[in-house]
Length: 264
Length: 254
Image 1 (cartoon, rainbow over the protein chains, first blue to last red):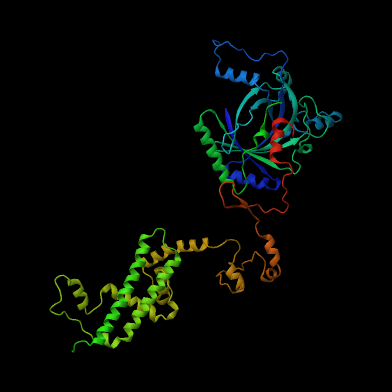
Image 2: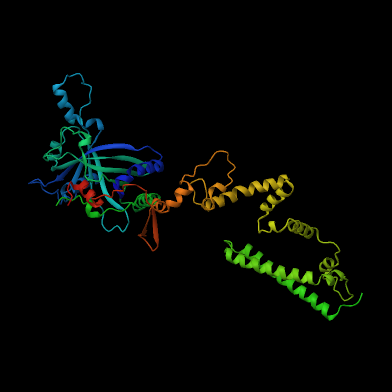
């Protein structure tokens, strides 16, 4: 699958108004999202041979070919995304206070790392030289087993890099997904070598961008990226949206290298 | 009844010339209104109207100067007149009464004239209806319908010309809002502050104006205007968008 994207930087003072404008435009209420995003980096396992070569009679299916290309081509950063809710945050401090208190609040929802659902999101580096004013890239998402993801990922040759939380609001406008998001850092401390089992309080999370600004991402997912016609239509739709939002935000193509997922 | 002198023929000829000019300029105005789409610019309409008005003036001057002559003249066809081919013209010439249509025009013109110089405005017919209303307070159904048809369009056009906000127009404000006849019993608040405040707050008002950002269009020439949100404490992001995206992709800023 492919996706075409446009981005815009949204200063924090404009955030509330833009939410309202988008709600008006899309005729829907914003869907608030919180996501844990774990970033993994592929490494080449020693002794892994790059694919079967020369077996021309061994006809590979398209998916398998792509998979082989992904696995044996250059190495990529990939993300593991897990939806969380506000209730999941702050469970660590809660359990601390409950330790010395009574055990009368067993119904208080705790963050259960073992049941955290995950999704693998692969994003290719945006296509170069498309001459189009949108960012387009190959993408693929698939569901992962819930719970501790580390064994699975390391078995596939990925090492954990870092994690952050993305908070934002989601809108759907026809075929366009609008995500007004910002990155939240975990409270400063030692950088763990694996995903956190406990979540800190949401108020302790600090935005990556100190002023608290947001990023608006408008994207359209295209099933068949090789079909020039559908890619063009998708771009046209994004341009239409860009015109509509022109007086509010300036949606632009992102710098290709800033979305470079290749691991060097 | 004597034959016309050379002098009198000359006068007639002059009147004819002026009428020809008048019909020509009217004709050209009509064709320009009919044929050009969109309508010709107002400046050209204005100049044509002033030409026509000049023509009318000279015709009416001529007519009133030579009134004695023209009223005493009687037209009759001479034997040589080609009445077979030019019958309609002949009929027009031999009329003793005005054409009913023309009679209407004249009546309307007279009525407008007797109402005094006040109503000498170049107005579309509905406004004339308004005058008629003030004259005898009676409008026919058709006229009323016409008025209703005209009013919303005209009001809308007038409204579009203005920049809305507040209870009073700038003109009203300038001439003093206490003089405005609103027809309302309650006191309208002047939401931009009272007159006195305004006079001292001239500078403040300027600060309160909307901030409009101008930047060059990315494609092609020309300027684009941003209606930026007015915010007391605008905070621009410190981290460029690219770096944020970079962090989101790889977990690193560089």
